[in-house]
Length: 346
Ligand code: TXA
Ligand code: MG
Image (cartoon, rainbow, N blue to C red; front, top):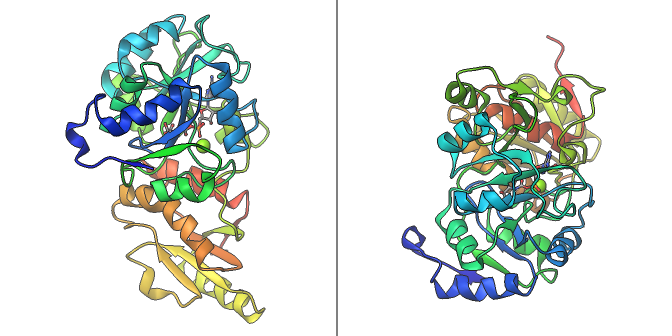
């Protein structure tokens, strides 16, 4: 683990980052912090590094990776063209939690893109990530640095728990800020902009920057549609115990807890600071404050992981309004639940 402190002033000359970058130069993989979640980085232009990423995560190879850059100049060797709307989004949201899908350039291996003819690129807004990419001197392909299927890592400790012994090292930059992954938008099709994965940048923000409407991948609203972002079809963000998302009152959630406990099962509730005191269960863990959804996003994955330590048999979770970052929070919770959603009959 390479620990970097005082990183507001960090540069690519930092000795810790240079040491970590030596592994990247050997086509190995290293975990590093971004403003969303930790990424597992490897040289985006090396097939061997890409294979190592998939292997370390246990990730299906048809699920493409995001390529991370530190300077706009690096986009030239990755994208075949930069559509007008993509340019506007880059100006407004880079560096930041927005991943843009471009037509793929010829230098990009199909291993990075899972065989697609498009490539996902983002410039992260984290001083350590930017300095690390510069120290490596190449764009870094990086999925979230968790074992495939687990909640994404928001601290170096989470990465360690999942990948210790599987990767040579972790650049530790503390807790990540945003806590949910970047928004993925497709700009590769005729002037349209479509959200493939909701995230740190909201639909409202995208529409304001573009001055026009932004589409949503039909997979979000139609049960039958195949998602355009391959990663959206896999089980994700799952804690060890079954997670049940409950669209209902606190009293209703408590009744589900009581029923589980009467059957001899240990039950947990994933709640918020405002509601914590109303529940009586084997583990009651707040993920941020309901009145400030960005705090819920920041705490979400850590809270899901904490339930594993609480050794519960079932977790009941509260729902959130699907506006702003709440849309991304609900997207992740629905995936954690794997369709296990209960609604109160009102
Ligand atoms: O915030 C983030 O985006 C983090 C940090 C590390 O940057 N990364 C991340 O990567 O979440 P990952 O691999 O866990 O998720 C990448 C998502 C997947 O859903 C994948 O299917 C989609 O992006 N994706 C990548 N390339 C794509 C492409 N060419 N077309 C459509 N979807 C793509
Ligand atoms: Mg991921």
